[in-house]
Length: 273
Ligand SMILES: Nc1ncnc2c1ncn2[C@@H]1O[C@H](COP(=O)(O)OP(=O)(O)O)[C@@H](O)[C@H]1O
Ligand SMILES: [Mg+2]
Image (tube, rainbow, N blue to C red):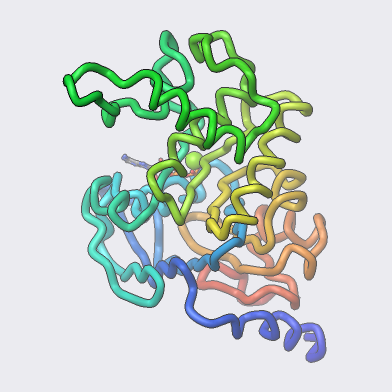
């Protein structure tokens, strides 16, 4: 192994306390180890891409962070403190929000109504305060996606990228510090994918940390600061995106081969050379 290269993988790691640290996480369904002693971390303003084939355990690992599944083993730290995340409410209380591929928007109402779904603002008379909700929605969208103009339309009329920005606005409006995006661009065309890229850059600038699950290598190379590859429930390795190339990452995904510039996990092929 190239000693100079190997040491460069460690150089960036001394960055203080991570925003999120998932340590030695395992969960099994029946006899199947969906996630097997996986560790990942995330710093403020950072995007960490989570890569791997279908069934690698990416969504399951992230669902443990969002409180959808309860882990069998392992610990979760937020800003260095161990936290109990046993349900989605626990996760939200820690500022963890998830955007699933389906977005879970209410199609027949507008952006503001989606922003406040289930948490509507009311006037002192107890009626819905549509004026305040729209004003707040314009403020959030102005920050996130200044070109957005379609405040009066039901979200089903919006493009995929616009819908994505409404879902993100809803997530961050309630003080998310940690955003999980599971395959955000899977159903989008190139132009809308670029729009999601712009949204992600804006969130980074605000110090939000993002786990970006994707099976698209290009998305991850474009958007992620670091990447972690999983295979068969185990972490193959973690690397700074700038320290590895496409072929090396493909080798991680397909063969479990950890390149010299990545930090190997328990799923790394032992005899890789
Ligand atoms: N609720 C569940 N019940 C049983 N098996 C599950 C469940 N969720 C995921 N799995 C299994 O766990 C493994 C990892 O799946 P998943 O996390 O969805 O992978 P990925 O997101 O990387 O495609 C797969 O073998 C999958 O079939
Ligand atoms: Mg998945």
